[in-house]
Length: 309
Length: 320
Image (cartoon, rainbow over all chains, first blue to last red):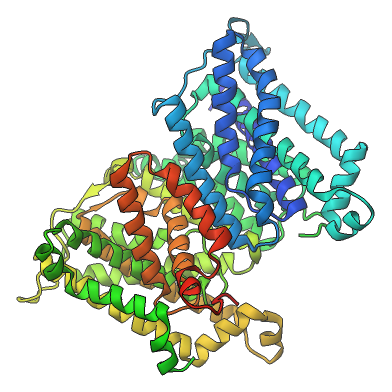
């Protein structure tokens, strides 16, 4: 277990955490503010990857794909909110789960009809395709560092948006007391559409920036969605700060567990037992972590204060 | 609602028609030159049993488990793994399936019932996902590809041989009747009253001195075991188990069947499973892209058909 591999895997885990954060931030905002469970958030991840990837292939510029994906996802997200999700706000969580489950089926099939069943391969632009020397003999792919940087920038941007701007103030007001904010003249439906649009852009961005590594596939958002659920449950629903910390922790533990757990087990288990228990246990690791955290703190690590959820 | 009013209720009449169809299926469908539907009915009945078990906790108890299909997987993999190691004795398989799903339901219930609302939904989903990934990583038992089951459960009774398709069919039918009976008896009992009361106002039930947590956990375990038995039947019927049978879309479908049929009604889960699977069958026959119609159809049902089929047929809304 040398430090080079350890650092690499730590960075990989951090990068997975960043992707999870981009998903979880939108999910937790939408839930905290609108009290809406949205399974179709995973579809936004997928649509962002396909739409942005297609633009990148057509224009031959990945950067342009990312830039043009943002308004596209904003429009798609707000359209979904206005046509379907808006009617679900007064409903119970069960109806929300079911209706957004229906949306997943629809979006998966729509993507299959438009792009075919094979998915989409989006190559990495040449200038991002390389490795960089981090010192101490550690080299790391440039692109993964770019992902981490984008994620950190988005986290900072969200922090400023929610904490320091007027729209952020309205979002926080809507989260802590929807009715009162509405009575004081905040256009709640418009605010909800905007928040949902922002969430869709973040999910789409996550899907698109991961595509050069994994390629865009139908249903690609669903596993990430469930991990993002774990993240926001650990972090405390409605809390962006909680989502950030829980994302990084989940990403790092999951990745490190997958690469080192079998070696760790070797310390006290016979080789063949460790070899078979390692993969099984590492795939369960974050769920065990979640169960443990919930056992001691049923509201998650950072339950938001005064949120109307 | 008294028995006579229940029998005049159109939803009950529809449910009884469905049950009559199941009862006569192996004779009626070949006579109508549609023998394929016999196996379809058998599948629907297994889903019906699983949906009945979910209705116990979700419909009556308000516990929205988004990971209920995991018990199908546990029951199924019990048969698969035991048969893989040469243990085909039905009683052993049944005992392991019952204790296995009871144990998992106890642990998962103990964790998730500490939480409420949307946390509960997400935690049941995540815990089920854990077992799902465990089955995916089990290379010895086929990982993603699943496991073929060469011989069905052998209960060692001469005339009762599950290898015979007709016996298999009517065993499932009998278990379905049993599940309906159990759910009817539970709902009407004191235990059932506590579960239902805890759904509408838990604080009040606790205030009169009932430890609701234990009752809810017990209900959760009963539902898990019933669904585990459905999994055992499904594995026997299909002669195949795979992680897909406990993937999260299966849990979503189970919830949908219950809601579609009408939550908190005895027959609702069965009619829900029937309509859900028949509609998906017809659509799938019509086009391979049937999800493009089916998805929005689900959304429309949620938005406009509150109370499900029972609510549509009955003018009074079935939802509390």
